[in-house]
Length: 510
Image (cartoon, rainbow, N blue to C red; front, side):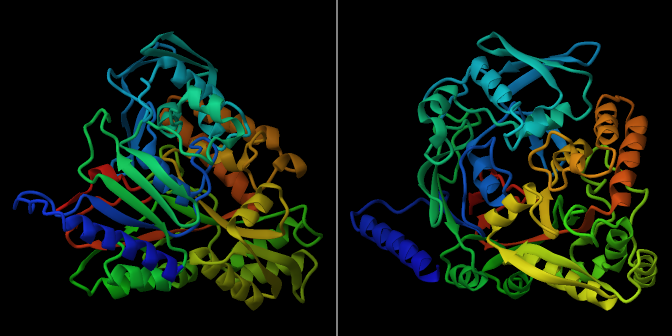
């Protein structure tokens, strides 16, 4: 990977030098010396379909290319106007009318119409789509005219506006033309950048879109390089080949002392968690064994092992500082190895038990957490074997409940209601299919639906807390740590980092 990255960048530099021999005038003192930026992605890119992929390495690109009716500002935690310049809602809170901006276009030059918005929302109603959770409240959607979209909800929905930030608007014509290949070929969004080159294993190139409604981006070319190896990332950063690097804690510490770089460590709206399959084997079918596992995990130790203590031990899935409706108190697990041993004895395993395999994928903090958890469980007499798969294989096994235990994670969207993606009975992305267990999945569905339709924030929080308590008591899904993300970038580049999805449109060169 190092050689490939260096060759590509070296060739780019040579071409730039040759182009500069043509006698072009020197830039004025007020003109930025560069209009391109080289950015790292730490895993192979998988899809340009903004409705189908939940992966962070895909979203870092998708957020530059696509737009939605509204935009979720991670820095303020609010839903802001985007393709929709305004909206109205009826007195019952069940009908939203969105008015589209004038002068918004797809990258292929086609104007964005209300029919494209209707198509996009209806496409996400399909439970097989990765973003179907965000349209769960919708009863119907229709175009009133070319610039007006009416969305009717099944009931009032407190998280609806935040959810609309995650349903990107796509071209109905392109989806129809590309068919099953949509997502694997270059397609059109409405964002500040358009895709001009797509090599999922090596490089993705974006160019600034001239007709973007906010104006053309000052950084005209964005080169995303797939850098899966930390050593390659460090070499490429220190040599100047990479301008912005999402790095590890160790690399962050090293680059922080170098004046060529600006660095930042940000708490992220992300949860690393462990799912435990209660149908996997006899031991894990026992609730007390699963609860023993929960009490045996030292989350502070995980935080220090993975993030040098800069993350945050997680008692709950959604950090209440970042997510509407997320409980900040209620039932949770504190590290208590003695309690873990007591529960094992009560479960009929006073001498310990083998609970099977702990699945993870290699690289990054997930691997560190899995290895640390294995050692922590062994201290109380719980044995497990580590099992590694490539990320895509592990995720697929997760959604098919083909595991004993798994360490995974997800970026939180800003509202607790998003947890239905992990627990709701119709979710295809859930790791634990509660319909296949003895737990009351119908009650869990109902309480989430009731909370979502509750406009009183205090009452909604009470319901969400009740739901959280129930899930955590099952010990089938255990929050571990809210991660810290580390960035290092060229000191001449003006960057506004966001915890999950950087918006490169906001960047500029000195």
